[in-house]
Image (tube, rainbow, N blue to C red; front, side, top):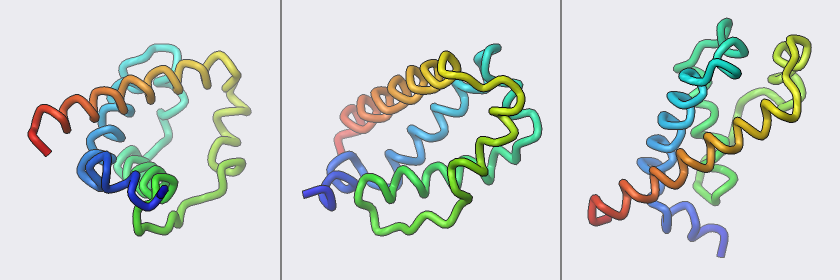
Length: 107
């Protein structure tokens, strides 16, 4: 059943659009932007898209860093639960926008 979710939501194109939207929101947010000042955003977008695709049943294997190591610098620079809640808010909005644009495109 989970294998169908990736295709059901529109596959790679929808995941990529949602990932792009998510990071646009993050970089526009004054409370979060500073956590990404040392980040190669193109690489991050690629890895995040890969990770989400894998979680949703796409035929993709995530080859990025482990989550603890990935977030160490941010945690050492003040990342906390309130920031995480804001990330989730932006991620949900990006997913909802991706679903709407997918539905309006007739796919």
